[in-house]
Image 1 (cartoon, one colour):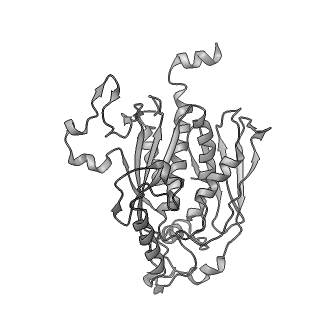
Image 2 (tube, one colour):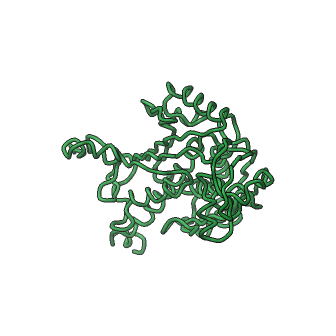
Image 3 (cartoon, one colour):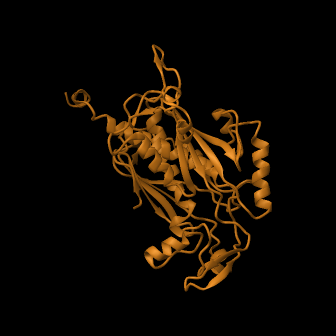
Amino acid sequence: MNTFGHRFRFTTFGESHGKALGVIVDGVPAGIQIDLDFIQSEMDRRKPGGKYATKRKESDTIEILSGVFEGKTTGTSLAMILFNENQKSRDYDSVKDLFRPGHADFTYFHKYGLRDYRGGGRSSARETVGRVAAGAIAKLILKEIGIDVYSGISSIAGMKGESYDFEYATKSEIYALDKQKEELWKEAIDNARKTHNSIGGVVSLKATNIPIGLGEPIYYKLDAILADAMMSINAVKAIDIGDGIASVDSNGFENNDQIDHDGFKTNHSGGILGGISNGDDIALKVYFKPTPSIFLEQDTILTDGSETKCNLEGRHDPCVATRGSIVAESMMAIVLADMLLLNMSSRIENIKKVYN
């Protein structure tokens, strides 16, 4: 299953160490002005490199193959591709017959009877370049009606931020939301790298200027599909919508978002009621586990079942949450674009406006 979405839908293809990766996006309305510089800037936010990420060097230059004419979308499928430039498949020769702890090697092998051991193949986080490209198209749609999506790091290695500045996060090397905690977080990431280990982190997301009514109950609720989207990202283990897990420690009076003539007085629900957006900001937290690629000796087994030691070499992200924040942001934009298009048919008067 390599396709996500209902009306706004994308399909990704490619592997970490294959020739290329890409995405095909369906359901893009005709007439959207394509901003190539913006799309590439989104790719650049996610690409590897820098002090706090994997040292793999990729330009991640995106090419649009179809679906655009004279700078605007045509309403047909939009295909985008980028070519891998810095594969080091030989780094994985020593692990081709063993299962790396924490990776999908074990499950892929037992499901399919074979696996692409070069960096994880299809299960690699490099697959997410296609999601970011599709997310850039979704953001161009959202821009048309004034919806904005933001992301940033709110916790690293259990050290929680105390303030959320989404504008500051766009300028931060690690997309930090709390300027006061940024250096502590950087030190934790750098220490994990130096000790050949990894750490987890939390990404906070916010979408603003959301119209009331997005979400398709009962089996395509906005919160359910956002959860689906986030949990599909490599290394994500949990999400919170609004207060999330913390809501179980409150009571109904505390948790309800009371209403006055100006709207909701609080936003414990994260902007979603009954699976439908209520007009408030949509708020999510996404929890990323520590990157499984670490350079410490671990116990494992070979494909024949015999016990051995795992000693990895190569390149890795000491904290995958940092670049993962861009992927989560992209997936949120994709879900919102899908829900916008689906909501257009919720009332007969909407259909009459088009056809009368």
